[in-house]
Length: 357
Image 1: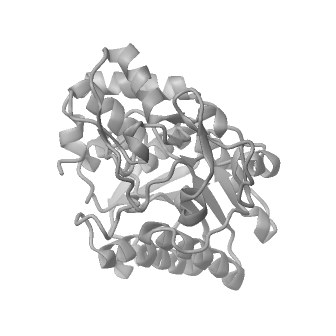
Image 2: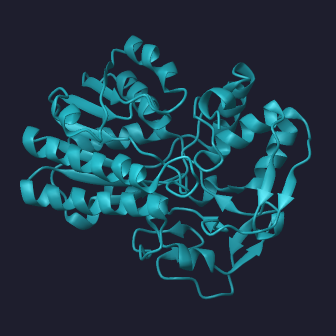
């Protein structure tokens, strides 16, 4: 079987390519990337050493996608992944749509023509902002927790958000591109008879991640702490109590291998949340405490004004993935943080390389 991985020189794509190569299944791995992300070139040679064929392609260009080698399955790990995309001056709204939605359309046309399966790496940001922003929370152990005495929105429990949680707008421009990509992927699969799976991922983290505060907060925080870059708690009074879950992307490889060989499932079972769950989650203040023990203490500034896309507690519940796929994350948060710390020590200029802005 030939597997095509898009965004193969990004953090998620390169990590998955290495994990699949090391699985020893005999699959041929082909990866494509447009190398637009600072730091992405650093992964090209290592991937080749793992036997991954790496080709240049811009998914926004239909002719680039049509010229890609034939594959049995496409894993779409390419995206502009910032919730501030289209609003922060780094990327225009049109560029965001071209990267995340037009690219998906071109890949789905490829799958239609080549009779290839399609797996989309989606995001927790498809879930509705309004009920999450208004979530009743308490502070426990320097971290927000859903208020056990309050009525919680449908689809949310202390174990996290499940797949039934609202996706009503607003979800951010970024979230909307992924939500639209999900819908189109499922429709294409039904219309043209190829398998489609949607994997909604929580916060991905691990050594080699390109650190930006709006994308890989665990990587950014640890690299910034080690290199003495300024850090601030933003929003919610400036206390750093906001919480996110944590998942190493190599833990997705076992699921992908199951999906490559899976029979067609009911539409309801083709979409799952993937995360480390509530057991992996931590607040920025708790992450700072870990960094202080690991690297030594330092001051963190505060800015209490909450921005429109800041949320107090976002944790995905992966119970459905366990039920449908017998999937569970394998890498605990402390191991992920230590991997990031070692990478920060070995690459002291990583933030400048991967996020010069």
